[in-house]
Length: 244
Image (cartoon, rainbow, N blue to C red; front, side, top):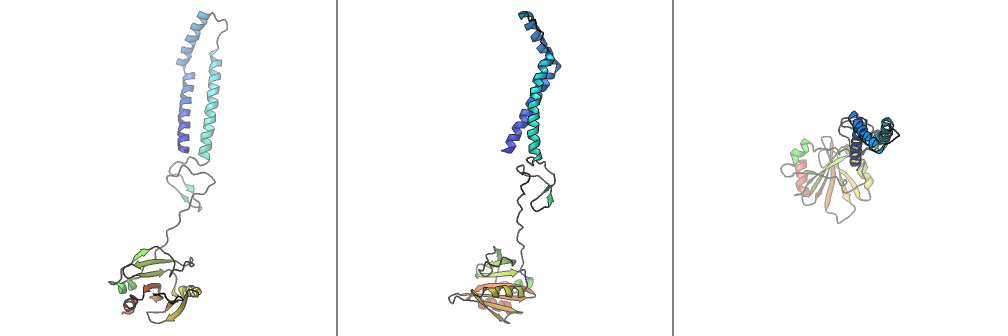
């Protein structure tokens, strides 16, 4: 809507400037003088018409209107309503940028800050080599570590193999940090450490006795990974992971 209003103001401004040009042009003065001279002769006017006074009055009115339009346009431009392309501006985060700026930006209102895309933590080559060709995973949305959604401070990427109903969590933090955090979920899982895999490992035994999912975290060449798998596929997964 602002863009439409500004366009209309510019058109009116152009029209008024043209009108002023017409009023002050010599050709227009001559035409007016001819008309007034004819009317003075036919009507026997005794009071001469002063062209300068007529022009001054009309021009003053037009100038006042132009000044008001100019003030309005300057106000819009100064408030951030109009910003040309390629001009540096400050974002909500305090950084500067250049480019085509949204014409609806208003001074004093911070620009929306885009949320950074979550970093992707890849599965290491040693792990992938052991899982293939039995397991093929793809990255999916993070929905909580082992269905626990309280760990907003832990960075990770979730991978899933739909065929084998397997979830793998690639953690940004070390094994010890993951262990310390998951020990806090004692009302949901019981932590049991073991040496069944490569390095340090621990299982998360659900407090729900009817749960048929096996969950564990292990360290593979210094990187921590979490696994969530059905009991049916667990024997095969364990064989793949422990194979040397």
